[in-house]
Length: 373
Image (cartoon, rainbow, N blue to C red; front, side, top):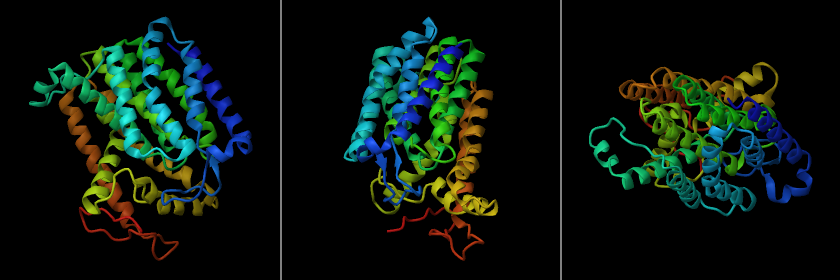
């Protein structure tokens, strides 16, 4: 079921991450993530090429997958090249714009559908299902959905352990669904991939010795997206919306960010700011909690701990209601309401440690804050 490949993937990923940290003085000019930027929360220059460790882990671990999973995994790995390459080039040069990275992940999604023949079918939504009956539309829709989810995971990659921890939670949820439905190939791939992420996670959480980087975030998001497509495509009894609810937190975060950046101030949704939910939690509740225990350096890790319940809740709903599209839609609505309620409460919070937490401190109902300039 992939346990052997998982052990290999974990060991290789952890080893590569350790080597990257220990040798950063040799490659730091290319790989170090500086402290400038409105979204930065780390206190020291840190390598941002943890994605290399994850990819090494899944590539070596994939060689030990059971035969039934090996072919599908090879197609996934091959199609992930544009997503990984665009992210790695950005990590090394800081010169690949968000539009080009989005196009690269969409290209990876298109390659996945063409290589495997797997794509989303009926979604259980009247009108949309008519369009999805045309293969060309369904394949393009799938490619855009995969690209969107890959970018959504990158949006939440801002504090130690949040993106990788969310990825591990979602992969284990997909593994549970695959096991319940008897899809041993996807079960093995999910367990091996979660193990590779765990190897990186051990060096990233809570101290943040290495970051996932764009290559890691896009590759992980791509992997989650293609599993979300492959599971219902290979097992028609599963609702095609399982990926949407499993990844509700990063998807909703992205939607809110697009609304804030485009509708409220007309700027690009790919431009970073300090108003993502994890940024607000970092500057308020996590700051208070770290102060209470006398370890302010743990703010970043505490932010992830406070936000992991969101993917845990959505993944639990996905596993329980995997065969019921209507209930999954209701679960998605519930997750949106939970997210918006949490966002508003955190955005309105005034820290007892200071008279005013960094803006925004006061938001009317239904309004989202404008970024600091």
